[in-house]
Amino acid sequence: MLPPMDLDDELRAELEALRDAGLLREPPTLTRLSDGRFALGDRPLLVFCSNDYLGLADDPALIEAARDALGEHGLGGGASRLVSGTRTAHRDAERALAAWVGADAALLFSSGYAANVGALSTLLRKGDVAFSDRLNHASLIDGLRASRAKVHIYGHGDVDHLEWLLRRHRPEGDRAFVVSDTLFSMDGDVAPVEALRERADAHDAALYVDEAHTLGVIGAGEGLCRELGVRPDVVVGTLGKATGLSGAFVAGSAPLRALLENRARSFVFSTAIPPFLAAVITASVQRVRHAADARARLAQHATRIRSHLRARGWNVPEGESPIIPVHVGESAETMRLSAALLERGVFVQGIRPPTVPQGTSRLRIVPTAAHRAADIDALLEAFDGLHVT
Image (cartoon, rainbow, N blue to C red):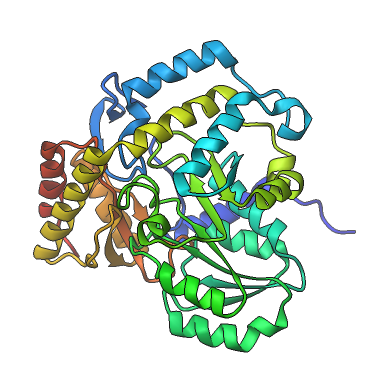
């Protein structure tokens, strides 16, 4: 007979292994202040690792819209959308989201992870084939794994490698998808979406893009694909970034939406997102579409930070997005620098494996439109005061 398993002892050992490797996460607990800023304990803190790109999480008009929507719709959806949870607010939000990305229809999900896992595991099956960028988000990777399709990984942004894989492996599958983020969340660079569309068309494949970090940010705020005149077959967007809320959506054709509504398990078996939140999503989309000044301010902040740090010798790649990676290399040094910044009242999260590959740990700076010029000054002064080992 086997000895009884002590689960807690095994879990403690696993946690200690993570700690020994410098990979144990212990996130600080922040307190929101009355002015929308944050504190760590009793210390005010400038947060430079939020994806609230336009600062709408504290937008007074949206907060007021949320109060009104609570009074009209109540708190929860009560059931899954296919039982009794679908409300007029959900339909209104989905129409607004589809119009935003230039699609015929859209379907709300509880999160970007749920959207990608649900959509990819529905649209691809065993016997199909997919071609995925090496640095795609974990939700795309997990959705492809759940689909049971054969997945081929092409080098990051490497269209020639994608072409080679398509020529060699496209005939092996019935349905085929090229899958990519449009703005990569840890590197801050963009995908070659025009070339991806061309390659997909040439090999009878669909194009699936995740616009999580471009919506509200790139160009007129309608995503990289619309900015470049590219029409994907499937567009995923999240609502916890530029829109300042939570949730996600998948957009495309009316048949696509109908199939996901009936077959995507992360939608079918989840309670509907709160109707009041759906109503605020509709309001937030309109705010984002008319936020040109905030987008310009965000771009100015990013340009200033990137230029200053590069001039001071920090390993920061060129780019234009508000995601600014400062490459360090080893996990321990990355977290030491993050802690040193925190001591100076600036929160810049260190990113370690498995989020990024071994040896590529980095500090990930993200300004928002809500930051003032003085906040950027404080960030740069904090970096200037760091001692790099």
